[in-house]
Structure formats: C-alpha cells, structure tokens
Length: 389
Image (tube, rainbow, N blue to C red; front, side, top):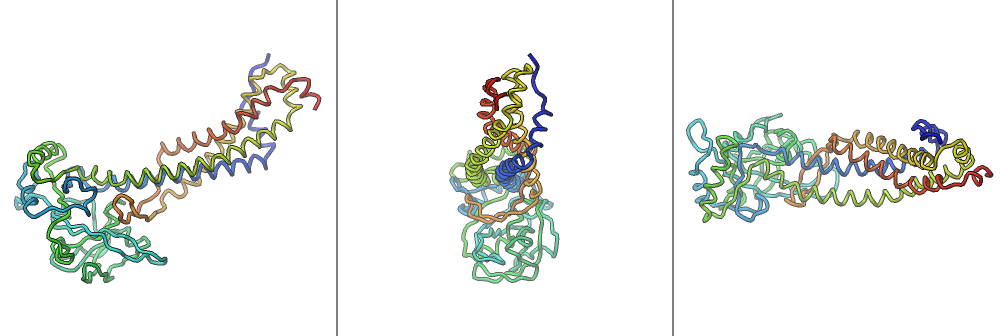
C-alpha cells in the first residue's frame, strides 16, 4: 500500500478549480474578516482605556460608585485623604492630590445627526502634573480661574471636530478652547479639561467627583489602601489609576466581543455550507481519479486525508485573506459610547499576534467542518464503482 498524498497534490486540485475555490475562499474570508474586526475592536478599546493614567496614581471615589461621574466626595473627605501616609509631595511640600469634577455634556456630532456624551473634567495644577503623558500638541494650557478649556486630540480629529478658538457652551457658561493635548491614544484623548474650581461654580457643585492621588511610588499602594480601609467611616474606595480605567472598558469590550462573535458564528454557517458544496462537487468530478488512486494502492485514510487537506487549505487561505483585509484597517479610529460610563470614547482597531492566531484557527476550523463529510464520502467510494464513472 502507498503512503499518503502530499499537500502539493491538494493545492494543485484547488488551483485546477480556480473559480469555485476562489468563490469559497471569498465567502470564508468575509467571515474571517468580520471575526478579526470584532476582536480588534475589543482589543483596541481595552488598550485605549487600559493605557489611561499612571501606575503610581490612585483614583479615589465614593464606595459603590461605578464611575467618577456618579461619585461625590466632600471637602472634608478630601482633606482626610490629603493627610494620609504614602502620598507624593510637590516642590513646596504640598500633597499631590487633585480634587476633580467630572460631568457629561451633550455635543453635536459634525456631519451627521445626533449628539455625543463628552466627559468634561475639572482638574488642577496637581492633576496636570500627575499626568505627564498628557502633552500639549497645539495652543496652550487653560489658565486657572478662567473659562478656558483644552481638548483631547481625539475630539479635535474625530467627528466632534472641535478647534482652538471655538466657543462651546455648557454649565450655563461659554468656554473658549485654547489648546489641544495628546495623551498617547488613551481615554484622556476623548475628554475636555478645564479648571476644577470653575467647573464647580458653573455646574453648581458642592462636592467633587473623585480624587487623583499621587503616591511616592507604585509600591506604596498597599500602605495607602490599608490606611484608607482603617478610615472606613469615610465611605471611600481606591484603585490604581490604570486598573480603574481598564475596568471601565470591560463591559463594553465584552458586549462587542459577544455580539460580534455571535454574528461571526451565524455567518460561518453559510461559509461552511459553501465549503461543503465545493468539496462535494470536487468528489463528484474526481470519482474516476479517486478510483485510480485506490487501484494504485492508496489507502482510504490517504484519500480522506487528501480531501481534508484541501478543505483545510481553503480555510487557511481564506483566513490569510480575511486577516490581511482586517489588518489594513488596524489604525482606523472608531468613536462610540461606552455603555459602562455612557461617555464618548475614541479608540483604534488593534491587531495583536493572539488575534491573528485566533482568526486563522477559526478559518481553518470552518474549512475542516466544511470538508469533513465530503472527505468521508470520497474515502468510502468502492474502486469498481469509481472506475465505472
């Protein structure tokens, strides 16, 4: 008995049927493309919010508040936090704590109907110093005590389309955009920053939304968190800033992933049926060839393996095509509402090696399912019946 047929034999058979192979690959590649885009969206959102903040900073909010916008911290509570151990100090010995105010405001989207919920953050000189990744790319920083704001770079280049010199209205006041800052494609790029005290007055606030606390180093977090736990009467909780914002992405990322993968699975059923039809057609047109191979001594398992190789090769090529199409969009920006915070967030599609492997495996799996029954059919053909056709 002869050994198995080579992968080259399978490849030549696919090339011989260029049209049907191309149509099958196109259908499977479309599914692989959708699957890849979904994973890239989820990864991009996690990367954007996960890169927000600094590992040596801590965000303090009211216990049980899911976001900063829903949190309130009184001046007395803020004063207690500023006296806790482990805090970094500024040049004049003051604790590096920023009392911040966050509000969601509606802004029209340019070029289309609808409005976006934009985060307006009232911050301080300490807040700017605690976020060195936020750098001015145009204009200047807002002046404390003024109705000036600076905008994240995503708001300047996205469908909100704000520009330096624009006057925007919120909080019963007009604000002038004086600068644009970039924060390394993090969540801060989708925010508007202004003076905290002015935001308190404009929105008639008597309490802050959150405190951003600078620690001496990331190892001091344990000391700070234990001290905060001992003051449980304050009703506050703290998280490292990077973890806090990373957690804000989980709900939306899971929603995108589940919805997209469900759609991909539904689409894949059609692609698998297409691959099955293609492989059954191949078996029907090559019945005499199969009989000849069996007469020459090739085992049933060799015939089965050969047809499975064709199906797997179809899936692999489709996966490469779909992945290449998805990769061409990996720097595309998407502006959407984070269902967890109800705020606008701009992020980029991100392709990782893990995503590339998942797309290829998914596409090969589709090919395997599509080729399994036809390959089994080919291996069970009787030599005499096959040669008669």
